[in-house]
Image (cartoon, rainbow, N blue to C red; front, top):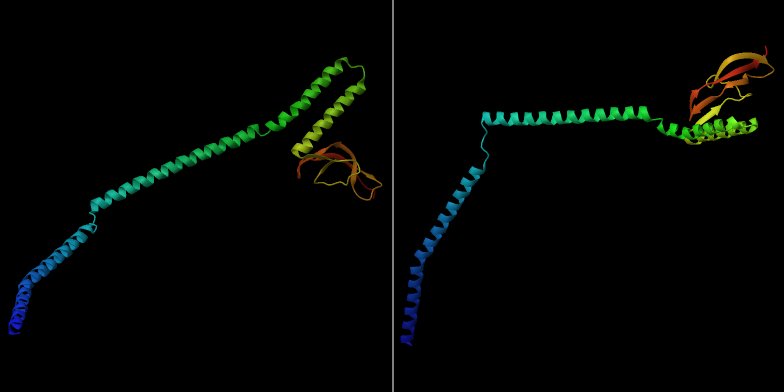
Length: 210
C-alpha cells in the first residue's frame, strides 16, 4: 500500500512539473498574439489614414472648375444647335403646309375639271342644248357633294330666309308686306367652312313697310 501511495505522489509531482514547464510557452504565445493584434491595429490605422482624401491644392481646384466650365459651354452650344435645327425644321414644315396645304382639295377638283372638259368637247357637236345643261348640272351636283361631305363646306342663302347681318351682306333694301326683315333675292350664295363664314351671301332685303 505504501508503495502505491509513493507512486501516486510521484505522478502528481510529474504533472505539476509538466504544467510548470508549459506555462512559459503559453505566456510566450499570448505575448505574440497581443503583438500581432497590435501590429494589425496599427496597419489598419495607417490604411485608414491613407484612404482619407487629400485636400486639393488651389491649382487642382482651379483646373477642375475650368473643366466643368468647358463642359457646360459645350452642352450649351449643343443645345443651342439642336434648338436652331428644330426651329428651322418647324419653319420648313410651316412653309410646306402653306405651300401644299390645298394639294388634296385641288386634286379632288381635278375630276370636276376633267368633266367640264368632256362637256365642252361634247358641246361642239351637240344639237340638243338640254343634254349639255344636264351634263353641267351633274358636274355641279357632284362638285357640291364632294365639297360638303369631304371638306365640310356648306352653302347658305335662300329667298325667304330671315336676314342675318352676320351671314348676309345686303346690297339693297326694299319695303314689303313682311313682319320682319327677310331675303327678297339672293344674288350670290354664302359659304361656311364648318362653323366659320368664309363668304357672306349677297342679298336683297325686304323689310316691313312703315
